[in-house]
Length: 258
Image 1 (cartoon, helix red, strand yellow):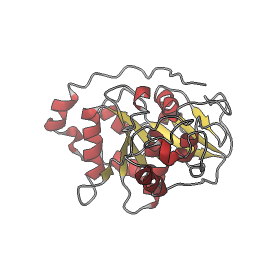
Image 2 (cartoon, rainbow, N blue to C red):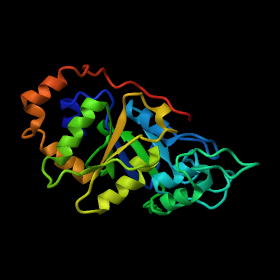
Image 3 (tube, one colour):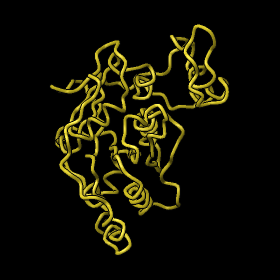
Image 4 (tube, helix red, strand yellow):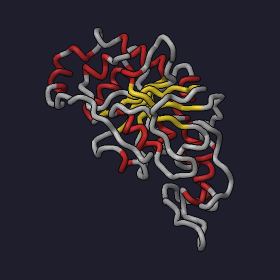
């Protein structure tokens, strides 16, 4: 499967399909059980041509497990509670807090408001869109890595055939939540929204400095693809922007913490 949008906006990274499966793909990147790793590192590898797979024991961390949709956040743990980890920390004997929320109470409210899921599948697969066989599998969502010019185009296209002006959201979220449980929820809503992500300070080191993610439920992706010819992507205004985007090289192989 190929994306006309990716070609028109000259993406340097291949779009990634997120697929739910009951069988693990062969020769996929995966974290070892019990070994720490960041889900976003695997996503970045998939934008460079690799396939990555997760199950409930190989998500890299407890946050990744919840962000991908393998259940909610457990109480306690080595951090003393996720609400303390995201805010002030719990004190002596525990790691310092990340200071993303001012108080544990605000952090707890944030966690309780997340659309946690426990998906009825054994595996979640990140694969380059070109590796998807639409005859045998349907992605749940598509993730683009985009720079500001490309993100502008994606936001405009997401609003092209829909009423209103708020068809794209930028939620405060972890990197894995922004490509996992939050877009899962959007796929269940009518209308759905695209989700801009990678506004997670802890995940930023796993993407290039000019990159944000743009994740759409698969049905919305298909709608956007169908509007390429009639949209602004063939106007003089877009061509003035497009010309300054470097021509992409062939998608390179990516690495992750296996």
